[in-house]
Length: 426
Image (cartoon, rainbow, N blue to C red; front, side, top):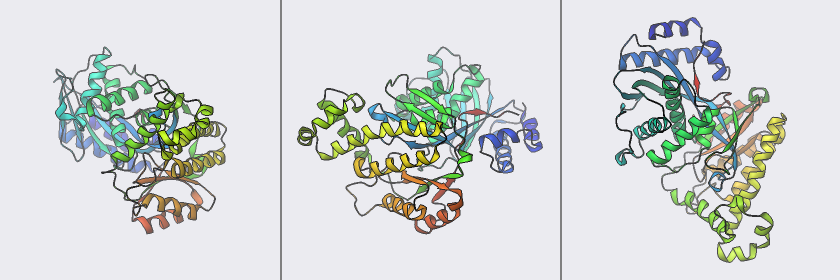
C-alpha cells in the first residue's frame, strides 16, 4: 500500500480494530497519530509514494523464573503494550537502511554479511546478524528501508533490543520469505544475532516473549530447541495492571554480581558431575549440603535452593493461568520474590549495602498492597526495576505513593499484550 493511501486509511479508522487489539484497548487515536507520524518520517527519510508495510514488536516483562535460564531451567515472560514500530519498503540497492528515531542510520551492504568486530554492541551488528541468519537458511534477501520509532523504555528491563530484533526479523520474513518462519524461529534468529554479532551471551526469554506474545512459558532444557507454550489467559479480565517501578539504580558496575550467580550455581552442579543445576538430583543435593558448604560456600547453596524451587513455581504459575486462577498465580509470584531476596540474593549488591532502592520499593509495595496484588524483583536484579501486579481499584493510589518516593514517571503502568511480532492489517 502506498504511503498516502496508508495514512488515509489510518485516519479513516480502517486499522482501529487491529490497533485496539495489539494495544490492549487503549486510545486508538493516540496510535493512529503515532503511525501517521512514523509514515511521514519514513517519507522524509526515504521518499514519498513508496509501497510500505508497517510492523510492530513489543517489549517484554519477565514474569517468573528469576535466574533460571542459564541453568537450562524454566521461566515465563509476557509481551507488553510498549513496542517498536517500523515502516518498511523494499529498495533496489541490495542495501539495508534502517533509521531509528533519535539515532543515526544503519546501512548494511548485503554483499558482506560477515561478523564485524567494530560493530559489537551496536544496532548494525544486530541487523547484519539477522540478515546473515536468514541467508544461511537459504533465503535471498534484497535491499529494504525501514524507519522505526520506539516507546519501549530503555534501562527498564523491558528489553528494547529484543523488540528491535523481532521487528527486523518480521520485516525480512514478510518481505522476502513469504512469512514462512514462525515466531519461535524469529526469536532464535534474534538471539543468534545478539550472541554472535552483538556480543551479548543472552538466553532466549527476551526474544521469545516479544516474538510469541501474551504469556509465554519456556523450558530451556534443550537449548537448541527450547520448548515454549503460549498460555491463553485474558489479562484484561483479571482487573489488574502490570507496573514496572524504576528505582533509579545503576547497572553499570554490576557485571561481577551477575556473573557470580551463574558461577556459583555451576560450581554446585559441578560437584555432582553436571554442567547445570537442572540435571542435579534434588535428594543428592540436600544429602550433600554439609560437603557443599566447604566446597562452594553457603551463598552458592542458597542460590541453588532458589533455582530448584523456582523451576517448580514456573510450572505452577503456568497451571494457575491455564485454570484462570489469578489469585494462585499472584501467590507464586510473591513466593518467587521472597526467594530472590532470601536465597538468590539479587535484590541489592552485597558490595553496596547502603544502596537498596529495589529493596525499599518492594517494602513499599508490601505496605501499599496490603495482601492484594503481587510484587518481585524484575529481571537480573541487583538494581533498577521491580515488578508489581496491582488491582485496578488501588492503581491510582499505588502510583501516586510510589512516585512520591522514587520520582515522577518512575511507575510505568502497562498491560499484557496478546500478540507478539505483528504486521498491521485492516
